[in-house]
Image (cartoon, rainbow, N blue to C red; front, top):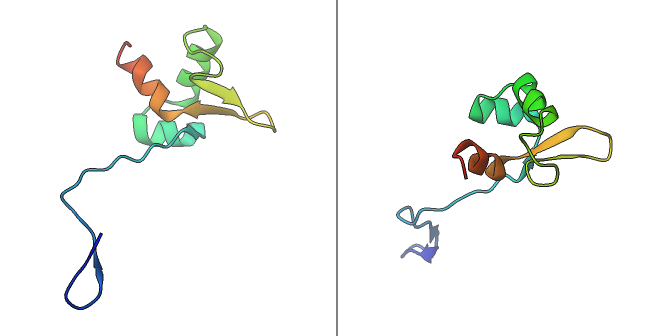
Length: 77
């Protein structure tokens, strides 16, 4: 950010940036990737996703998904 002639901060809108989401609720995966909870759970139970890499259970037992690591699986990496 740079200060303009009025003393206000201006944001550089030409520099790309990335926001990593990390561990998210299955609703976020469905909303942003289109994978339903049933699809996620079915693939998890079939062993297609790796615990600790693609999914974890939070302290109350909810399965959380790693947003960026699912990209690697989807892209075949």
